[in-house]
Structure formats: structure tokens, C-alpha cells
Image 1 (cartoon, helix red, strand yellow):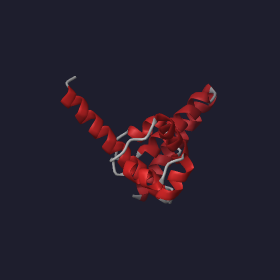
Image 2: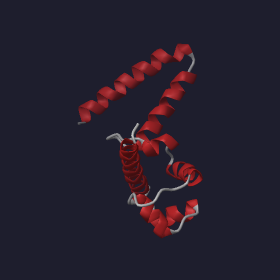
Image 3: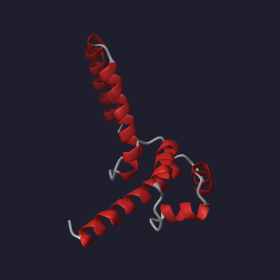
Image 4: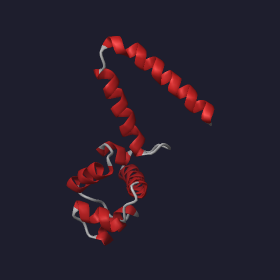
Length: 122
């Protein structure tokens, strides 16, 4: 990969990361100052990270994911449903994987019924 292509990927990831920081913070009704203090940054540095002007270190990155309740990879995911939804989906899948075989049919029926009800509410 050329240096220019790498720079493009880095810029895109930085843009996604900064957008997810802002989105997660606002979803939880946190102020920038609250997030910065929780992860050991100054408010001005956190503000720059949220605007894509500064990058955080790996330890802070991990602490941010814990604070926001998303997987570390979720902060770099670009999807229309937001990074928090991928964590919820992973959690549901994990529960289903742990369920006894005999309960899977009931879970399937319950989920299908729920989705039909939700679809009718639209």
C-alpha cells in the first residue's frame, strides 16, 4: 500500500472514530469535560480528538470503549445503526449460543413474533 493510500485510510478511520466519540457521548448525555476527566485527558485534548484533530493512545482508546459501553472495534465501525448496536447484537448472539438446544425453538418463535409486532408499529 502506498504512503498516500495509507494516509487516506488513516484519515477515514480518524473521521469515523471522532464521529463515534461524539455520537456515543451525546447518546449518554455526557459533556466533553466529563468524558475527558473519566479517561484522564484534558477537555481541550478530548475536544480535539472528537473533531479528528488529535489521536488518543491505546489505553485511552480502550477506556473510552468501556466508558461508552461499546466494543473497542465499535469505535472504528462505520454503520448507520451506530457502534452501540453492534455491541447489543453481539450480546444477543452470545446469549443464544449459551442457550440449551431445547430452548432455541422457543427463542426463535419469540424473536419472530417480536419482530412482527415491531414491524406493525412502523
